Image (tube, rainbow, N blue to C red; front, side):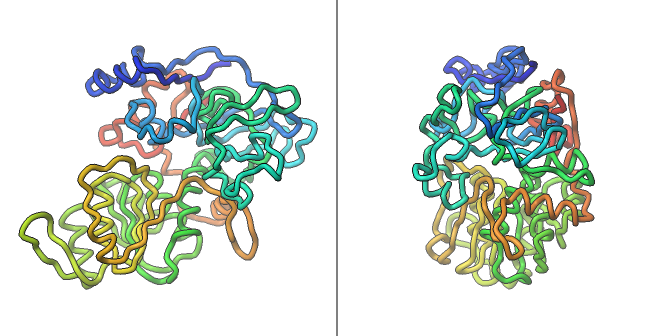
Length: 416
């Protein structure tokens, strides 16, 4: 089958970190370690496994960070390469194992790409505490090999489909997944809505576990990408009634933030400062350094960027004893001033992926809650998908995603 395979090598790192600054050919072109090629068709790994035909798969900022070798090396032990990338997946079931009772051939499904202890083949008594608690996004055995099942080879290490040598992701024509990773999609949900379930669920997971305890307070969402816009959507879809202030950079992102449910949209800098002052914050100028504030602020700030500037702003804009919800993939941040973390007694909570949630009086997976909300919502979520490309045009797709200021891209998808 045709698939986009990526390998991590020292030579690839050197090319990407030198030539890649000036030339896309070194990051996802002919000089990179990303190749569209024929790879073996994946086989079912056991009775509870399912073969899928990929219908659409998103390009994520994490994918770009890996292709450019700009991601933190801290997560390297929890992946294996070469791998077919793509972890935001909408697919159709084409084959099921003898023990599958969750999905049927012909159904459209979305894929939870996180690999749990159950997927690894560990018996219940040997599963890690995170997986036992339904929070497999933080599986504690992701750096270890999984057990063989029904004659299949031992499953290599890895936390996520798409960064796994044995489990190809959605940037290919077919893939396999364990039935516990699959969630049927109602026919009323469009392709461009359904392919967003994975990034929307990241926002939903953060909102349900770290969102405001007061359903009518004010919150600030920093960021203008799919995760930030999805967080705004998730706040509204889950019933939040308070004011949402969104900080975006470009006009089309501001328009989408309003459509997703933001009450007010501001640009970074002067406009953001003004909205902070309007909460009752008073400005002070230290002898050295940036202006600081006291009083007012936002009880909850969602940082969906994860760089030094966004986290510094979140620390300054959060009210005393408030909460910063970290969704941006923050890594090494030099010279970050953490003074207000202790001076304001702030709480910082990070979230990754999804898991078992308390939702409307029952326990269910984040994907199920997101799918329910998509069926009920009248917000134009599909507009977050701005570009779609066939697999053969992957270089154009990655260029559009990587140069979003020029292309106007928000979510770019591949349609194998």
